[in-house]
Amino acid sequence: FRLVLLVRVAFCLKTPITWLIDGNNLKCSRGVPTCREALIRDLKLIASPKNIEIEDRLSNVVLVFDGGRHENFRSVICPDKWFECIIADGTRQQKDRADDLIVDRVLPKIQEEFYDGEIHVVTADKELRKRARATRCMKRGSSVDPQKFWKQYMPSLKCK
View (tube, one colour):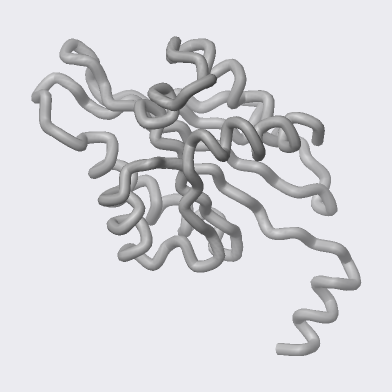
């Protein structure tokens, strides 16, 4: 265990960070763009490029929205960045469809892909925070309030 820790410190390898964002919740926060496209554009700025060097910090962004009444499930992956936008199926008009998608499918998938990484869930929804923690996928991550994320984290993440 100590040897692994020393090797990690010696090579300055940093763990990947995933920002799993409840898009509808973030859009409702004060000072955040309410237009889905503007929010996507701004969040792409904090996602790391795909050709990142190992020594750099990998910032993965997964943005999940509730789909509108006429929107089917879709996932859009940005080819040159670690950015994915997911729209939950809205055709059946179920309550908390994005929350269910985050807990049941997205969190386990992120943990599988970035096992050593930190997963931070950005939401003000207390029930979603509780359900996300219960999955045990957020070992070293946390829940972040959307307004705090937008005002404090975003400016420093854009400056990478």
